[in-house]
Image (tube, rainbow, N blue to C red; front, side, top):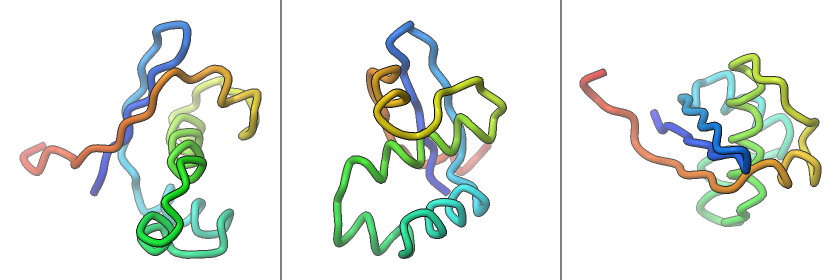
Amino acid sequence: MAKIKVVFTDGREIEGEITPAVEYAFEISRGKGLFKAMREDEKQSDVYYLAWEVCRRQGESIKPFGLEFLETIKKVDITDSDPLA
């Protein structure tokens, strides 16, 4: 499983797993599989959607997905999860 780290413009950081529920929400929203989208489309907006979905599922009070949400983030990183965790 992969992990996402979101750094907001106010300095807050949120980390979370790209769980099956996050992946499913992505696929419903985008109309294609996560891995196919990342491999073929390579759109950064897809990464931002994953970040938004992870934050939303953690109960964060965030703006709806779109420009208003994007203006609140500074950086998003996707990494591998720690296999020992």
